[in-house]
Image (tube, rainbow, N blue to C red; front, side, top):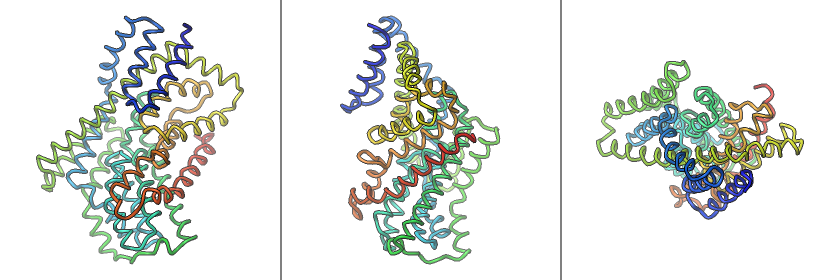
Length: 426
């Protein structure tokens, strides 16, 4: 059978398995192994199956993932991030829609420690939703703002999605982190604008909260000084070139551990829980990365990527049209697949085609991260929405949360349009 045909059949089989809810790591590994076997024979397939797990897991860059995860879990379990929403509330709660804005700002601060959308949504949602319910907020906007704010977790460093993209696309992690920081703050600005527009049209849905004195503001800020110190040290060392990504994660983990012990908020039981959470999360990410690397080899060996490039060239699509098509594909995929699986499934197909069109990989990595995070709040599988519902089911129904995220999805699409418009300046 023609190798390209094998590659196409493998891609179809992969999509079918994922549609049947087979775990994406198992789907990638099984389809890739059988496909390589069909293209090159059993011995090369067995050789790759035995060597790629080691070469993938032994990657120095990939080792930054467990380090940053450990930092985030220690900070969470030791309660270092608990006061972020309160600090944001006393500073910005007096603004129109101030509590929703404070939840977005609190999520951004939590993102700088955890790098996880789900963790951001869960942590901030437990605190912010009851507070907004007591203040008389429309709970659709209240829960929608927290669900949307959680997506910032995959943009602001330490972003697991950006680390994986950097490894797959061979792009500087530090440059991606710097771009992710700018994009994360841009997302925050667009979300705040969405809140203000909702308030302007329906001020009764977002009543203003009472203001606080400067003394109260600085008091709350001083209460979260360990988190500010941790973020400043990790970002400062990373962007100044003192640390690599792995060293920054390791240093951040050590600092979080030292602060937790020093404040006596990190017990031995909580430390063990942090380690277990880190191992489970790292293991699931690593096995998906192994499957993705096997699939990349299959795509290259079958000639599928070259065939796709020739097919796109034959269509005569301009670069902007091609990017709009890819944006649409990611928006659809994001509605059904979790972000990391969607990322590692599509990159082997898209990167060669985009390289022929001269698309900057750094810019594209940021665009993909943003598109995949939109999928975290779009139905039917918007994971952040389900997380918020799990922590706020006493206040709001699931369909109300999905209704509340509409202004934030529109804000996201406006930001994506802005990125496409500014691409020529990057």
